[in-house]
Amino acid sequence: MDATVRSPYQAPEGPIEDSASRKRRPFFLAPPAHKLAVMIVATLGLYLIWWFYRNWRAVQRHEGRRRAPVWRAMFSFLFAHGLFKAINRIVAGHDATARLKINAGGLAIAYAVLYLCAWLPPPYWLVFVSCLFPLLPVNALARRYNEAIDGDLHRAEDAFNMWNWLGIALGGLFWLLILLGMVLTAIAAWLPESR
Image (cartoon, rainbow, N blue to C red; front, side, top):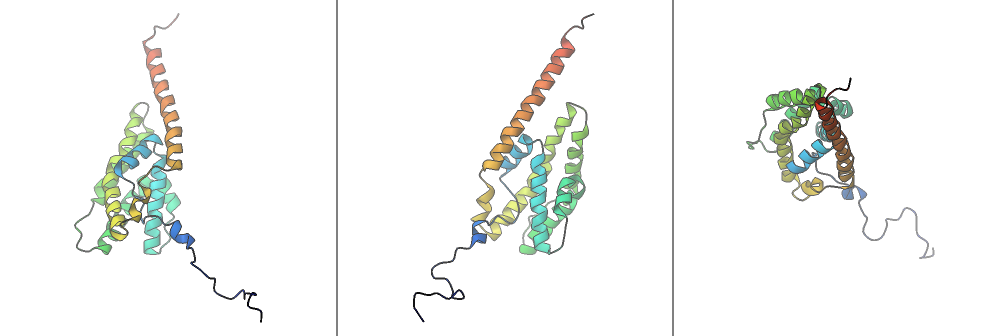
């Protein structure tokens, strides 16, 4: 047999690149607090859907049960308590001596109430963006867990990527339109009516 002919069943020579390792992400989506706040405010809360989706997917992977993460993310105000409890459970399972724990019930109620403020009439609906405050302790706990299981990888979500900047730009345009509408409404209320 000729030495130049290779068998298709022969193992490849040289290092094999693992494409999965290049696409690895931290276990939970737990960006720094400033990035979480900027993304929630700039995208008028749309980032909340992504945050809940990614974290429900992490819980689903960890527990091996189907969780319907899309629907749980879309109706996050109904399912926040379940996610917060699951994050508590996962962190406690990783380190039973850890004293890090969140009040899942209280934070979920606060989140749901603030989230539902989006249905209030203008300008009171703006209270809605404060729903990020109950998420901060949950995000911090998930971030500590990511750091504990993979110290280097947990920083993969720290920087603003192209999609984040696009969301900030589009959200910024919407915020400008909202502010312009509020200013024009206030000016129209001050102007005397023509008869």
